[in-house]
Image (tube, rainbow, N blue to C red; front, side, top):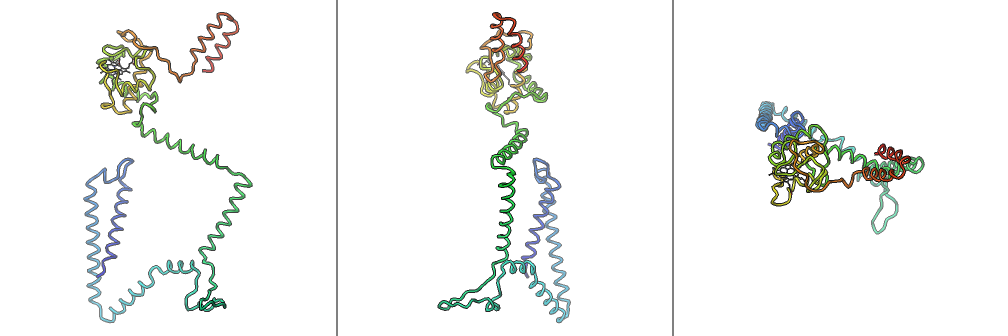
Length: 326
Ligand code: HEC
């Protein structure tokens, strides 16, 4: 008995079933089988039923065959043989046609009349698959010529820029789902209320013992003033939280306990303290921090104010322009 057919059908059925379950049951981040492990059992039982069904059908047809009279059996066999011979006939035909060659028996029609030491040449047609591909390339060339050489649809630079822009959109999308990948180089100040609130919760459960709930400071320094021992701005603050303060001061590295996103959230929350007035502020420590990347508006204003002491009339206008522009 030939089991190959049964084997192939069962595998095809199993694969289809697998995709079907995943298609109806997968969520964004897990397959159906990860979501519902017992699905494997259901899946296994269904496959067993399938095999049982196939087996009983096979048995049935063998019983029926045995019950036929000998000439009916012969006819049946012939029909099966005929069907087998004609299996995939249309594919075979297309394949033959695409070669465009002549059958061996007809080769004498296309033989050329030269003969080199018994070696003869056939004047075969070019294979149609080749000819049509050749026509297609000609068509392509015409379209290409008109589109890019005559109408200058777009050039390589533009194509590059479109691709980069599309990639940028994808990166931005991806970053939204990959917030936890921030590190000290990529961290930015988070301003969403959700992030700030999350930062507040983290701060209240980890940091208040030393920095106080209002950031006024205790064992740790005051976080509400503009002075920073280890540097202000989101990057420095993130780095301090992640790596800790100077050794022996009491500020440990939090990177073991907090995820990168959580450190970004609590760092952003810490930065909301600036300018608030805590109940018992600790005296300022460290340097006044100015962000080197920030627009130098203050310097400009100071300069103008100093100047304006000499020429009060002109400079007020200029001051207005600078403040408006920033
Ligand atoms: C055990 C006490 C303690 C705890 C808890 C603590 N800190 Fe600190 N923190 C300190 C000390 C002390 C310093 C000063 C470090 C130094 O001088 O190097 C500091 C410094 C800092 C600084 C830098 C301040 C500056 O002026 O540069 C930041 C920001 C900070 N902590 C945030 C946090 C956050 C956020 C948490 C909670 C996740 C936290 N700290 C928990 C004691 C603590």
